[in-house]
Amino acid sequence: MVRSGSSKSLKKLPPAARLRALRGRLAADSSVTVSGMAADLGVSEMTIRRDMEKLAGTTDLRRTHGGAVVAERMVFEFNYLERQRGGLARKKAIAAEARKLVSPGDRVILDTGTTTLELARLLKDSEGVTVITPSLAVASELQFCGSVSVVLLGGVLHRGSPDLTGPVTEHCLELFAADWVFQGAEGIGKDGSVYNIDLQLARVDRLMRSKSARSCLLADSSKVGITALVRTARLADFDVFITDAGVPAGFLRQARKAVRRVTVA
Image (cartoon, rainbow, N blue to C red):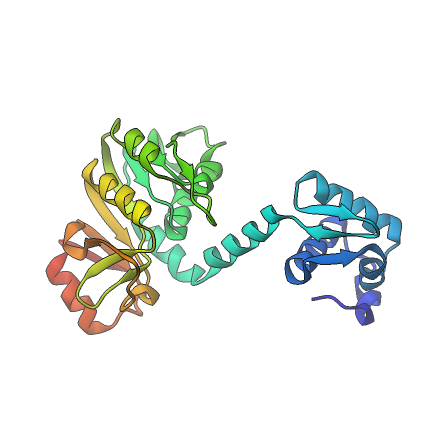
């Protein structure tokens, strides 16, 4: 966090960097004052007011007399980004292995996990691939990619995440047949049970697998030994399991007995 004692080193911050600093302060403190931010960043109060107007135009903040407070949208965004960045190197490595499974022309279902979002980013160079997803984040990532067709499933927005779920999502899934489904997990128990945190999300997960010729579980080593509210599958329900080198050797041996193909990224 930037404080007023460091303004000299920040006087030459470009506009984009000032906006990042302002958003970061809002995420940490929930509210800021024009005078306080101007002093911290070593710029005029008029400059900070203009920056606040820009962020208010994107619904990141709400202006108040003499300052601004964080908008609910921005709280959500920072919470989601924090979850997305956790174990990012592992997620990227797992996603890179999953990308090798997708061929031109494949119909692919991507669930709402942050590792499948990393896979979506790698699919931008694919040819003729159709991505079916209930994830607003995945759809947003691929919306301007001309070589990928994106089908965004309908449904109810899941509280606290950019995901659609519920009976409408299930009804939409009934329309499709896919070559692959790629799913994450909230946890994988020592007995090979795969868990989700929400009953509706778990039901959608099961339906995704039933509509796909092949299924792939993407889960890093931090998920092993963890349980959650709902058991959605077993390792044996997947054709491929991709994880990372941090998985305990004993669990890896167990997984290789249950799953036809296990890849360590």
